[in-house]
Length: 499
Image 1 (tube, one colour):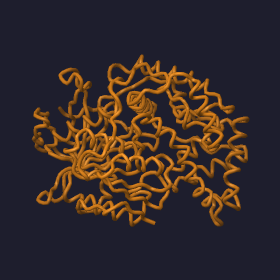
Image 2: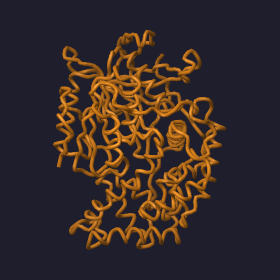
Image 3: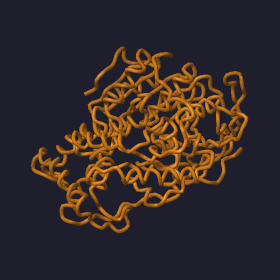
Image 4: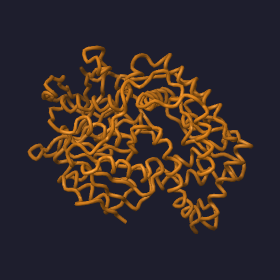
């Protein structure tokens, strides 16, 4: 089956683009047997769109919507590849697994994949894909109200007084919309099913084993795949690592933001007080934190109209959400600093440009389905009220959001299976790389993954700031260690620290 003409940009909070490239049709890849069953072959053809490496080609794989009913309805999974540059030296395939949930790696073979060392590109096909539910794979859609697509609404920021009543109301409204509009597919979005899709893809590629580079949420996908299909793995790189706590799963990822902000804020404060910085906020680093807290509190009381933004006001929670977004990379610090300076003057910058609503709807639906289907969330408000109050007292920068109720608190569908428990059973072929200061996946959570994997893993901790380490916000030592692993399979003899 050829890829259908429904290419559109798919983006997560960092706006990850999807689909594209121009290449002639090539012969289908013959699929190998997977667990005794055959899998459809992939027919590679020209990708839609422009701007990608002309070697990138695309295909579509049919997978079961419900793996408990493998002969039932099927859905499409959009995939892409750039073949190994030296076929005679080819080792296998390297799967690029995006973050999210709601991110795509479909255009990564010609994007971040081209930053990989030449030796890796020579020996590995680079494989991207749009996870189930994310266009141009068979898309999910909850039909949410436009206001509920705001990042500061999707993240459960409490009211200025700490109340969670409004969050519970929002959760019910959004969960009802997903139940009403999400069709059968919304029930089958989960990390375990994405891992099963990956194994179908591995078989369709004709690979006995597959390597992977998972980033952020992709580290959880990669670890679940390595747990469910341990002997189908070659070299597994987990970059910016999620906490795999099987009791909390994504609740632990949300809660991690309070620690991640605390880890990162001193780095931002040092930058924001540095002489010569055109976006300098204070003379001393120690003054930046109280400045931020005062501004957020003032905006809680007196929001500033912000025409064209969503929501159309700059309030305390929009400022806090901007902080969270800006801490993902030091290069984004000026966005927060300029918003703080404008707020201090009672003004706003031009409204940020948002992706098309259809893109936001699709990404939000995939995120909702995965987050809410992976693990059961508490339903009552009382527990969230207690947790939010504790978080606000201990971590005022994040105002209780990380322990609050997302739409999963009202999700109408119970999990169809228990979360996958990550263990040390399996081959010792995993490398973790983690920045010390990461707002989205803090070091503390990465250490939980390291502990869970035990002898299977070695960890590289990097003295760097930002979300995404390898070839992004890491450093030369960390990048070299990871590159050697992907190229040769060689890992350090034990956990290492790169300063």
